Image (cartoon, rainbow, N blue to C red):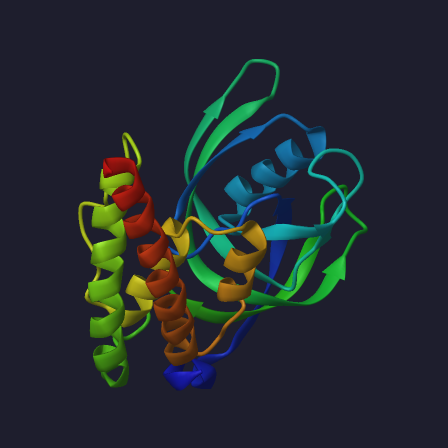
Length: 217
């Protein structure tokens, strides 16, 4: 996986299985009401630990611990608002993808031994500049077409030049199923990830252009 493979880091992360897919660079607000996740957030505040956001493979968000997918995104707590009864609203920001090596369920919440894969601030890989340029052009078209089709659709203020960050942003913005997003998240080669996003963008751009044409006729 390019230069990141030479800097593999293993660590332990509290895991938060959810019915969503988050990419590095994504911001995720969460309402924390279950006692186990209140405990988890308190631990993360005390130890300055990240949280591992992972899509649920089997199970539910509430109740017994769900089985997480293998690849997720580590997030940092950037804001915590506490209620008198212990509930919390938190804001998190994704920074790195990780792969779960082993899951420990001895605590009320899941804890994973994970291998960090890459991060939002990884070094710009210039070998990806060519394919990133092609992807970026299709992505700009996708955002423009979507703004014509969907009321209130706001394209991002900035579209990254950094190939890896571009790939993350596209994964976040694509209107595809959670399963398809998870498939993208699990592609560890950025070259392959950008190629897959090109295929998806071409397909979506054709669909949106057809919908706009049909609406205007």
